[in-house]
Amino acid sequence: MKFFIINSGSSSIKYQVIDMTTETVLAAGLVERIGEVYGRLKNTAFPGTRDEQESVIEQPIPDHRGGMQLVIATLTDKDNGVICNASEICAIGHRVVHGGEDFRGSMRITPTVIEALQRNIPLAPLHNPANLDGIRVAMEIFPQVPQVAVFDTAFHQTMPPRAYLYAIPYELYEQDRVRRYGFHGTSHRFVAGECARLLGKPLAECNLITIHLGNGCSMTAIENGCSIDTSLGMTPLEGLVMGTRSGDVDPALHLFLKQNKGMELEAIDALLNKESGLKGLCGMNDMRDIHEAAAEGDVRAQQAVEVQTYRNRKYIGAYMAVLGRVDGIVFTAGIGENDPIVRAESLEGLEAFGVRLDPERNGLRSKKARCISAPDSTVRVFVIPTNEELAIAREVAQVLRG
Ligand code: AMP
Image (cartoon, rainbow, N blue to C red):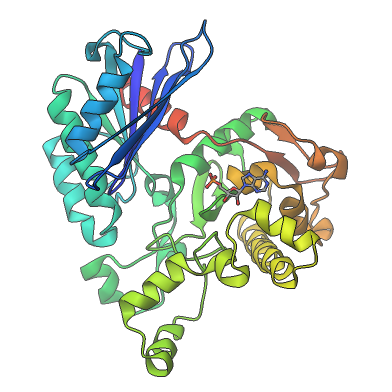
């Protein structure tokens, strides 16, 4: 039961091979710089009985087809390979960024699904074409293997109109599907499921706030196991303060920047996506560097942490109001899993709402899912490592079971 999980970007392919009988990763890797003079494949094999083995290949990789063929050659390599031949792959899961309103769950890929993905390109003009490249190449190379699309947006399709509509002319929703969609759905769904297990309740009875804090950041309000609101919007720019993305700003900022700085819309979009967030505030986007600078007295680094954690707190408060009863708050992803300072500051002042951290539990380093709230906290707080590839693989298994 070996599944091949693919996340195809515009010039990259990230992948894992997972043995689903034991849910163990057999190989993980990344093809980068597709289409550039020199491409690069880095593969780590986990052969089980032997130590993990890393291999790097640098050579021109003209396109996604070439990249995928190089991955397969590496996976089936006589010395380092984790499979004997490609026919051992019994299913393929593709991460797809935008399913628009067409997909409420993961789907077996058919020509109709591909058509719908093409229709959604205007909503994700950078990501969906790259995802489609990966799908087309995998379908060509593995014509007999069932392939499943797992959407970043699907989990949030349960949001009600009051949460997903923007207060702009309704025709823009009707004609152009301008609305909030939300992203990171696979991650939110995965940690919600794990949290329900830790709470000892069916997910369908859990009210949760899941907080994904990595380079991209998002928060989701989950009622009875379903997403009812989330911080990312029509694109992954809205909401929380992220590594290089601004999150919420006044939409009139665009006009201001055009009129006062002579900036074109594309430049403003790049500024908000690539030069803003933590990086815009203090020049750094890795939270470890920011803490180091903050500890040395860098005021802008200190302020960046404050701006991010204050925004987190505002959204937590909003989602508590939306949900009424909250069983658990979950932190996940690079910052959420590893940063006790950001977790503590994000929850500061919420004691009156029944949220009390246990400072000792919060400070412990661990790769395991764990509770970090005090015994008398009415809302339990958890750190739950996300695993998007495993989540995708589980989705694939579920779709194929029917
Ligand atoms: P992700 O997008 O989930 O891979 O998260 C990447 C981000 O997590 C990095 O840019 C860092 O800001 C942050 N990160 C990773 N490790 C740590 C750590 N030990 N402490 C604080 N932040 C971390």
